[in-house]
Image 1 (cartoon, rainbow, N blue to C red):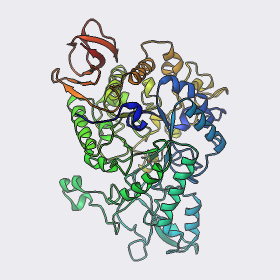
Image 2: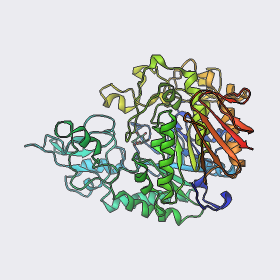
Image 3: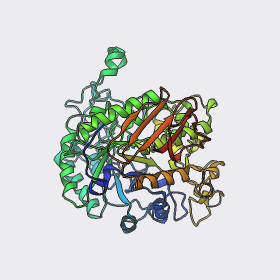
Image 4: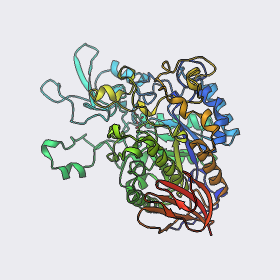
Length: 560
Ligand code: GLC
């Protein structure tokens, strides 16, 4: 695989960056209310600096009723009072920059909160009014409009349409919500919606942010006429599998990104945007990465690969080929706030379905071997960080946190739990507030300096949480935290890492291996122990005795 690139110091930072995702509600709590906040993030900047990441992405921090924990935005140009103030956000951005850390904020353009002033105005206004035109209101089907306008289902479960009561007290129109009912879809055919978001981009760019993570980036445009999707009764399984959803990945979204790219480029400093686009195959993702569109797009095919050598190799090949055609860098990712943590996935061989925002959370939990999961997650991390391009890591991944599976049902907060008819516990298990310290005092150091019980944080922390704490791992040179720090340091020193060339190397069917410029060699062993080639070992994901590379282990070497 060859690519002509300027040297790392001369190319856009987002071609190589390792970005750390901060789920603000669960990162660090500075005022003892059991929820993370802006000042909490600021207080932990030295930790992030020491970790060696290049950028942070902060999940939505805007005023929000928190029905979907910030992904229901009530005002795109302010800060949620529970999280802090605009002045504090500015201080955080400035301090991060002083430390050489870039800041990416989350933009949620597909839908707003139902508490957004636009939606409230739409509810008060008549059908057909200008206010209704900002959202996706439609008359219902059936004699009295009692049936939804089409058969679309919400991602979280149930119909994607909600019927409102009109000002006269009668049942009225329906509005579209691809997610929760409290997240009405905006109408992106309306120029006012477009110009509002252009203003939002400028608002944050003027405050110095380096980029945006675009939520549901494949969702804003819907197929004309909002046609029904095929359903089980009128389609064969092949037809169902092949159908293109009329609300995902429509051509029209690209026009929006071309306009946004111009805005980003009108600012200094390689401002960027990264797409959360659950589209497949890789050639569809590449369309979002054309030179006049977005900088990065998460590689969800990689995230949804099973821990199997063939799957991962195939995905890496296909992704690199697809993005090479448009000249974009890869964006590897194994974890985020929407999926079961990789420790559990890799231990249980969970191979989730493609094109969904959530994964199979079940698996045979009785068989869960956490040590195996941690071993594989560590091996996966060194694989990901050696591949060409950038990478995204999710808070707690550097601690090899497992999924928390025993949150009591009455404490579950993800809308998916209720909307699925309580069949899917949702995503809370990967969102539990971080363990900074080993002792449960002050919620394992999450709420400082206050004394907060681990059961009183917004999601309860389990009794074993302290075993994974930053404090404990800082004292252990073999900890996952120590491995990430070492890996990120090597990544900065090795000019051949980050974006650029890679060459596959053959060491047998159970081994995935490639070299990077500078005689750098990355070898991942999925099978029986095998004899390493000659060279100097730089780092390994589990201990190596003699010259045998154990199973489920990645090694970084300088080849001889
Ligand atoms: C994205 C977010 C997810 C959210 C959804 C609706 O997939 O990552 O957390 O629930 O969009 O905004």
